[in-house]
Length: 303
Length: 270
Image 1 (cartoon, rainbow over the protein chains, first blue to last red):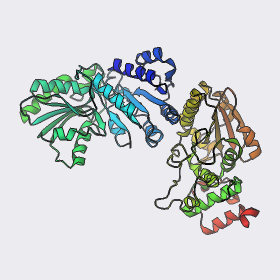
Image 2 (image 1 turned 180 degrees about the horizontal axis):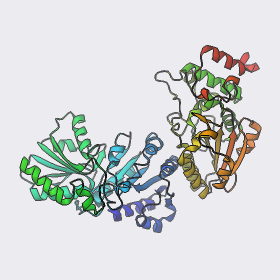
Image 3 (image 1 turned 135 degrees about the horizontal axis):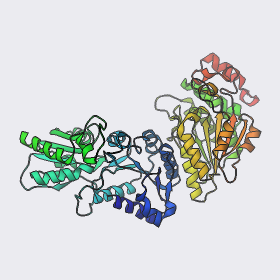
Image 4 (image 1 turned 120 degrees about the vertical axis):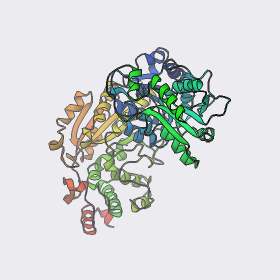
């Protein structure tokens, strides 16, 4: 996904002279393409995330099209108030990219991990939120964010998960990545880094799997696609509070549709306890690939 | 309202008192310390089109110190950008103007009052204008207490590194913040030297001497410029001057009458 992100940044810079990529001294190789092809449209603002967002707001006010890049632990977490007051209030077209979301920086510890970004941003008016799983979802998210005359956040988590989508997507609606012919009463739903895991589980257990990557406004077709299932199992590398599971149940409530039984495999309510690999870090939340497989098998036997 | 704006500080202060009295508002002292600054900016320094607050070639005024917003409302009334009714109805249900700076009011550009936001945005605007080759200038009024906030210094680093000589930062240095003097809470002196060491040119001068301000507010070629405007909180009404409580106090009819009496001019009396 990082190759696609790099290309989207450089390509948009080439297409639009007003497009500027701003970084707070993060994203070393990610910006090689834009620095090579449009060096004047990349600005390393320095290690100052708070001013970075204000500067981006000022640039947007003068007609520029800024993209603010940071690690999700800093953008949006550290600069939530700047996003709220400097950008969302005035509905400025600023794209925020929060990289390394979830537990990507497993060895660096909790300071660089982020399971709260979607929850933090969802209540802010006007902002659009995307959590793509692979190149094609990222491309659809990015293009929609660029076309939107307001702020958008793109959550980029573990970027080398297996590719799920085989071709470009026409929109950012929820879509089945696996849909067996036999009728199932359970559907798997996931976002971002857990989509590949959910998709593989769907294939393995013969269950439908729905990818939801536009969290706000919540993919408007999702409830229609899910309302016939008796049970939904949500997978997300985000806190249980305010992420995909919360957004999904909120959407059921807002649609006035009875909420099916929902079971959630998400980050648990604690920080990193020990150091280790990405899969190890996930295992502290019973969310490693092996944990998910085992828990899903358990859940299926219970049904 | 006459067709020509009257930026006499007494006129502007009377507008502020009228609003504060109508709305039973606090923050009178915060507005009074920057009246002369606002008067000079709109009276002779900034380029703008009186027909509207957001015309394309205007210079920007960014009020980072949102607590002084009534001073700007007063100028907008004189410019015809606000109606008398907007001032009369201050803080009434469904009215237009908040007690801090909100971008929903045309001309205010940004939201401030949550401190440490305006200067970074002003710097972004100045940088954006530079990139466009524009000669428009960005004036940013900040509070001295507000300079406790980290993003202000972050923004100064960026402004200096990028040689934003279209930026003028005006510090409303009234020496008082919410709970005491700046000297006893977080000492900011030597203030001008701090700006200079960050790569700004800096002038330390009275913030109530309008003749001095006219010269002091000129941008400096090659670097961002700062004016440490030494002001008095509550300036213009003797019983409010340098009194921290006038951050919080409201006007009762007696106080309103006494304050207005100090701000009379031959024209206002007639």
